[in-house]
Image (tube, rainbow, N blue to C red; front, side, top):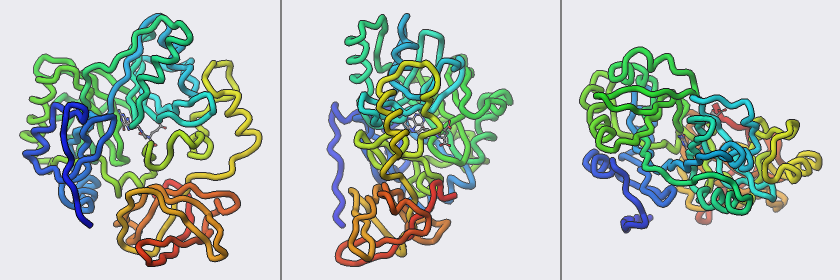
Length: 369
Ligand code: THG
């Protein structure tokens, strides 16, 4: 398959770390929130093995923040998500489906409560800021909505704890999963959370002071040699094996949270007010007609650039394959698919046609591991 280069422009935003990752050998980009997001540093499988054993530093500035502050900020944030935030605490992150008036998904961000009247919505790839501004205007809410200059560096992998302790001291290792606090680097304060888009453990540094962040980026490599630190990026193999979902790939605005396995983040039994609540009640009582599930495909290679229909031997369409890659753990291709009733059952079989060749597959639960 021919590969094409990406034409950069002001509209396709670079990050404060772009020149650094280009020196370090980034080999592919994707576009996320109108910004460059590195997608590979050479072999994805080599990066996968390295991430599972060592530590990587990722330029994930494309995980943009939608800042909502002001008197009605808590009301607006709650209006956008079906997760009950009434007992949320300052210094915590919350994984929250954002829902529209049809009960469908708009995004699946991490929401940080910075203060009772200040929130960051750390978004996946869709324009949440305009949705928020529309809701604020329509409801005459007293809020300020902006995209602050925040450029996240993620430190991921089992050795991230050792590396971060060496920079910030022992206190950083005591952060709880999805907790955040402020830590000093050369006299500059940085918000650091224990989070990140891998299941290998790690941290995310929400860099507000660009110069200090760039210096910190370089410093992590300088002192990280003993931890075998390397540049990296969200890893397709690791994230699919771990069942970390990707908005726009695995699900989008035609899907609802029950279909996507987000039921534990849907609170219909409290008196919180959010968009689509009645629709979600109806969907829940009627039951869903399809569900995101895993599939294991009898091949060792795939390059998915869109979705693919999954058929069965009778010729029924049983679902839609949305993401897939070779899995070093299962030694075959695995994928995430929207499977239709009545086929959403473990061990249900199907087939895929790729470039004139037919491959068989088996449906399984998510996460794979
Ligand atoms: N970190 C930050 N912002 C982000 C992402 C991130 N924005 C875009 C994207 N990633 C949003 N999507 C996700 C998906 C999964 C998780 C985080 C963001 C995640 N899930 C954990 C899990 O599934 O085990 C924990 C969820 C929970 O609290 O229960 O971490 O990565 N800043």
